Image (tube, rainbow, N blue to C red; front, side, top):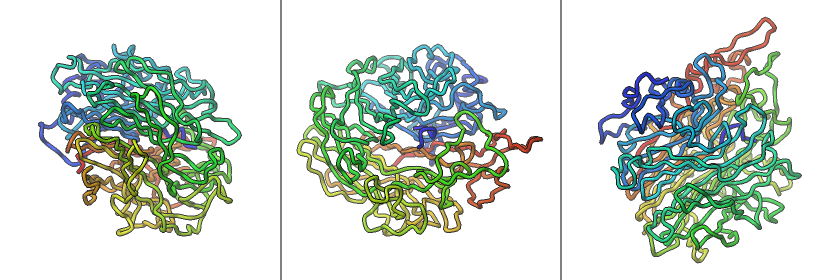
Length: 636
């Protein structure tokens, strides 16, 4: 979801539509999905009809050089030349003069390729604040912001996009915390040329609403997942959507449960939310797998929690044998030692001047001594002095819908590797548990890796978890895996820090002993066979190593890279996407006298000192300091 949750006129339609589309068959390395550097954003209405449409948001997005993270991607099962991506897209946050344009903070991107992912045309899902296109009225959501995109196709030319959403369009402090699903179809219908599959936005509908309360209190929905039945069986075309519901302002902080809905009419309507987790608590990161016989499996992470009477973090699941109409009880699948980087908050004032940024850029204000999952400057400063983005162990799962003989679910996750624990020597650590005596910090670092196993949903038995690519043989850690399986082929993607020159399990990703940050992560991928359950040698996907710790959020005080990567495959064709920082322009921060902490994480920003000594906000956000993007490529 967006970082707020942690703890644009077209000149001619022809010009925009032609941007970045080379001849079919070209496959340049690392296509950029987010063309906000003069490439132009185009309305879906224009994409479908060819009629020009412009608004201030698209104008801003076309030149913003803004931030995008948490990518999603989906390959059309009817035509692998058609690939659609999405992300949390911040391109409309700022106007060209650096001011907030007041039309919403973030929204779901819609990035379309019709040449197998060699290049993409950038757009936004209709319904954003300021959208007055003819398609805007098709969006039936009540919020100003939207994030956590997830995508899935059916076998009939329809694409479904799921999202969590928040913020009151009227500008109050209400966070709402809704979840919705949007539908795209082939404008010519199912029998039309598949090159137009998933092109026309038809509608979006709320499937659950959160509380109209400030500061994430009450009900807040987040951590989304989506899948569609493509089996050709009796439930073919069913759309399944799941998420975690957080309930705030409780004695134990946030309590989270997993909820599920389904649509049996191609996304027009959805069932009432069904709570899957009746006996386990503090669970999130659901993912959905549909097996070849139409059975539905929802996996998720269970956190160690006294209410669940467990001191173990684990993978659990629920199963449905009636096409998502009902589910059996939660089943314990596999325990693990988590990799959850944390530190102790030690907020610092920026000299004699306040941090002056507004709206979604306001830094969080953690209490001194509290546990935090990311660290940076000023209000985001931590005791250790490190600078790092948040992110913990996640669970992703899928199934081969062409396999009619088995209820096999394929699972990846990124925990700590047992035996790699080391004393951190600081307040930083990657292994924590709410039920251990020192509940705030264990002061132990570790090395994370991508584990894989196959679960037999019918029996509950699973293969022994194995590392897809053992990082202990070369150094570095691995994070944010995703997996796709189709027609017997397995494909995986993850972030890998084997090229981090300062790697040490006692420190956060990309941090040197002297607290400098460095380029440290790449996207890697591997492929395998369901027949042997063996994986190929890992392949580097990104052509440039990124520094994930640029301070681009919270008023340029803290890094944020999102919470996941994404991969999609059809047979042997596979495409992956990741958040990328190769285009970020470095700078200095006037509030700290340039770079007083020498973390080399400050981005280009323009600030002035007023007559009162007060330092202004960044008046030039489009200068490149915020140029975080989504990149993608074919994967093994």
